[in-house]
Amino acid sequence: MASSRARKLRKNMTNAEKAFWSQVRDKRFHELRFRRQHPIGPYIVDFYCAAKEIVVELDGGQHTQETDLERSAFLQSCGLRVIRFWNNDVLSNLGGVLRSLENELDLE
Image (cartoon, rainbow, N blue to C red; front, side):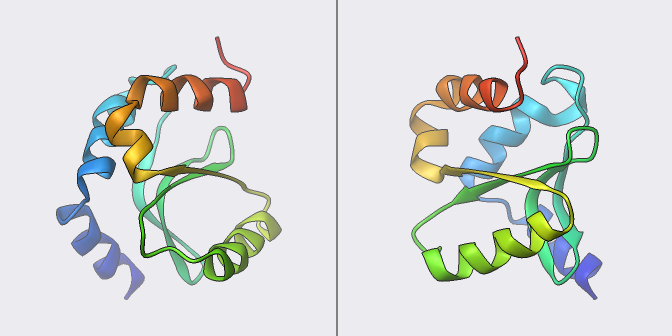
């Protein structure tokens, strides 16, 4: 059930998700493999990199701190690190977002 919902989300990505995906797909970002709209437990995360055990979430206005905290707590309990960026940051400063991700992951 989650996989069919994930497939639907992949087909209807936001502009921010499309922009981010264009930079990380096909191992374009430091040879790391990212999956988009990936099911983990009861959630479907925006982007997941198994090699670094990270989840990248792109947040828009629909996100609430309470919901995000619950979601992040579950993902962290699975041993994953959650990194969040605002959609408008991705759209207006994608290079800066990618540099921030590099810093978070200690990449050069």
